[in-house]
Structure formats: C-alpha cells, structure tokens
Image (cartoon, rainbow, N blue to C red; front, side, top):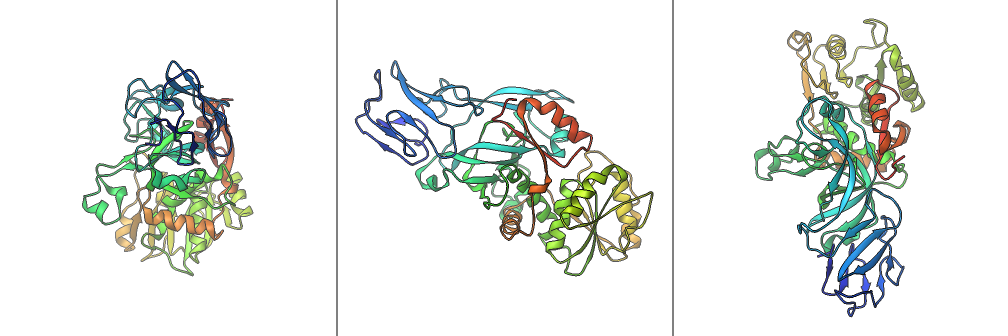
Length: 424
C-alpha cells in the first residue's frame, strides 16, 4: 500500500529510502525518511508541495508546508477507507439539486487504490457543460465537485507498478468508470456506456486541489504545452472524436466552422491539420475571438445577417450550440455534404431539419471522447499541429469562481481556467 505508513516504512509514490527501524508508534521519527532527495523527516514528492512528517501520540501527521488545496494537517496513519482519516481538500461544486446551488465545499479526498493515482491539479477549464450543470440542464449527482477539463501533476500512486507516473504533467480522460462489458465499452466507445460515471458530474472533479482517478486516465503532455493550456487537452479530444473517429472530412474539403469559441478554434485547427480549407465565422459580438483565430493563421469572418461565408462548404461544423447557428449550417452546406454537431445546446431547439432530406446530408457528432480520440489529440499536440496556448484567456484563483463563471456565460474571452491551489 502506497499511501499510509505500513510496517515501519513511510511510502509515498514509490520513491522511498526509509530506515526499517522507524517505529510505527512513538514520539519522534528516529530514522531518515527520504523522498525526492530531502531527509530527516522533511520530505518532498516530485510535483506536490513540501511537507513535514511528524508523530503525535503514535499517529503519523502529514503537514503541508505551502497551501495547495490541502488543509495543513492530514492523518496518514490509517488504512484507506478508515473513517478516522482526515484528508480533505477544498473544491467548487454543485451542492444540492436545482438551478444554481454552487459553492465551495470541503471534500474528503479519496486515497488512491491499486490502479489509481492522486493528481495535484494545476488548472481546470470552465466548460459550457459546467454552466449546464449549474442551470440543471446536464445530469449530475450532488453534492459533487465540478470540473472535467483537468491538467495536473501526478503526486501519489496506489501501487508500485505505476510509480513511473509520479511527477509527470498530465491531462485526464473524464471517465472515472464504465461497465466495461456493454457493446459500447467492448467496441471502444465508452462514451456511450449507460453506466458511465464521469469526473465533474457524478464523481468529484478538478475544481479542487487534488483529484483521484484511474491511472488509465492519464496522458502525459508535451513540454511545449503551457502549464494552464494543458486543461484544453480534454476539449481537443472531444473535437478529434467528432472529426476523426471516424474521419468526416477529406483533404481539400471546404470546411465552415460556425462559432469562434474554444471548441470552434479547436475544430478549425483539427480540420486544417486534416487538409481542409477552413473558414471560421461568428457574429459582431465575436470579433475579439475572430481576431484570435486570425492570429493563429485561420481565415475568420464576421457574419452580418444571413450572409454567405464566401464559399460553398463541403462540411459544416456547428460549434456555437445555438439554434441560429444550426439553421445557418444546414442552409449553407452543399447538397450531399456533411453536417457535424460539435456544440451543445443544453435545451430543445427549432431548426429546418428538412434540409437533411432535401440535400441528402450526412449528419454526425461525437459524445465526449474516447481513448482513440485522446491518442489523436496528443499526437496533434506533439506534432505542433494544434496550439492550445493562445486559447487561455485567464487563469483565476478558485475564490474568483463566480466572476469567472459570469464571464464564460457572457461569452467574454476564450477559455478560462480555475487554479484550485490559489485562493486569491
């Protein structure tokens, strides 16, 4: 077991040199507890804050030496699941059912079991889905800490076989668990599993200092991806699922991307990487976002009324999630073309769906992500064919969550991320 003190050894994350004669109980630590190069009872894990190990009346006490979401004193002497464990972190979550009802909460931190890891959260993106949860328009189980666009650094592991992950900077797949036996799971589409439990909605998510997830959820990030921009990897994996699993556009296709938000500019970059001739369109209110698109080398245009985008699209990617955007997409795409729904409306919309019949359109989408789409996303990042760094507008402390949520709801900027370790 890699979390508590066991048989006189203080083991964290798998990198340990400990005096086997250190007592399990007693008034002081008599041997060196060496972790990451420091000794004499003061130890450090790669990727997690400095801490001190002391013993008080036979109980090992883990004390964080800098704020990073943990309360300062944590009892690590009890086995996993023992009710006397006092490991907590502060998170932003859905407190009770109904519209609104968001706030900061003390969250008991799950100790990683074999096959699991504990990740110190660097940043978590605020997604439209978070707004839908706030508005009671997306399934969840309250109370739950929200946030599913997570990047962090692996701090602790549940078993020695996973110790190579300690210290690595990662992005996280969102599924905490699926049934593993339904036709969807067995065919590589866990996103369609009826028993899927995702972080941020049914399991505690990334708007907290620490998060426990299966080790299979980890994807190591390329070094050139910015510290906060790593949170945008999860949305990128959703886009690659929509566009590349299976491929829905070909090199040379005219691709119209409607909606220049984060999902829109990710979609435009993926379509460009696939060889598409891409134009991104938005409204006058989107001008600042379209300017970002142009700085990224994309062709961007402001639409006035029902103006033409300037070409007849072979493929339309609707990324706004608005009824008006969907209607415009159906009207503009060529006969025999392809319509891809990327954005989420969150509520019923009225659209001229007869265009699908009269134009003989192919309509596709993608729900969340799959391991395959994550592999494609990481490859695009590694090859520098998609750039996440310009998409981060602000990295805000968790105490500013209300202001950040309001900015996202108002369509200001691009991607806002919450830094849970900063209280403001």
